[in-house]
Amino acid sequence: MKSIYLDNAATTKLSQTTQKYLISILPEFGNPSSLHSTGQKAKKIISDARVSVAKFIHTTPENIYFTSGGSASNTLGIRGYYLKHRCNIAYSPIVHKSILKCVGNYESTYPLKVDKYGLINISDLRDWLNSKQTNPLVVIEYANSELGTIQNIEEIIHLIHLYNGIIYLDCTGSISTIPLDVSSLDVDMCGFSSHKLGGLKGCGVFYKKPDITIEPLIYGSQERELVGGTEDVLGIASLGKVAENYDYSSITPECRDYVYNYIIKNIPDSYLVGTPIGEKRLLHNLYICFKCIEGESLMILLDMNGIQVSTGSACNSGNLTTSTALSAIGINQEDIHSCIRMTFSGRETKEELDYVCIQLKKCVGRLRSLL
Image 1 (cartoon, rainbow, N blue to C red):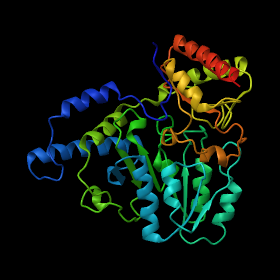
Image 2 (cartoon, rainbow, N blue to C red; image 1 turned 60 degrees about the vertical axis):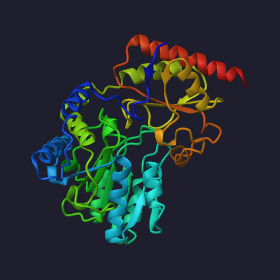
Image 3 (cartoon, rainbow, N blue to C red; image 1 turned 60 degrees about the horizontal axis):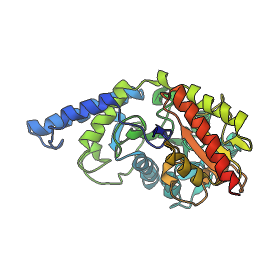
């Protein structure tokens, strides 16, 4: 049976270059905090990775901190800043669950308004910032990996800084398809995960400007006392290696658009969720509602035919509660469980794409025939 993986927003395959590199350093078992030569070899692996990641997002190595993943970076940035400054927080309601749960612990929070695509209402943000907020912190995603919507980042950051606010930018959903330049964007804090780029799971990046102070969440001496605990040397090494070799020029919309055009022409009562194709949308993201079916059932049926997709964010898979992103953009309640997300690598062949198209039409028709 064919096996076609179309869930690259959930996680990506470990790159061959990274895999070979990791195998080569497996014998380096030392603790990076040890002062002897064995420990210092491990420490150099981390140091080299820090340089590579810093170059990857256009900053200096001392601004890079390694965490256990995107959720850890989100929590460190938001909770760490709140504990230090007792700030007021505005946030996008379509952000990752780790952010929603984090801000849910505080009273001084405000969910920003978004439109039907998930784009933040700039006027609403301006009004909040203008309401004499003390120490304003704004938390948004660069792009939502479920809807595919890319925010108007430059405009948002400029507005926040105009009111002396701070931004935390979750880049986990965007880092695989949108190059990140924290210097030119003037980002205050951000984070992302290694496994979205072809690295190992369980490792992430937290970036902050040097003048921004936060409280650590895990106490210890590592990562300049912001992220305590013995470092995950292999995870950090994988992140450094993918940062060295990542090729954004290979990220194109052709595979996504090929399947989308087939769906619109051949599968009735189907529509795109999120921003339109060709506008502010992740190039590999296709989030489709097939009316009158259950997305979970379609996902399972496609999997039985060798095609792996999702019903949205991997962090919500297996959870039949309503997607917070879909609720926030006001999608029809009858359609809210009828969506699937396909995220392409861009390496799919025409034969594979044709197979996906045929199976989509076949499986949707089969499910609708059961009504």
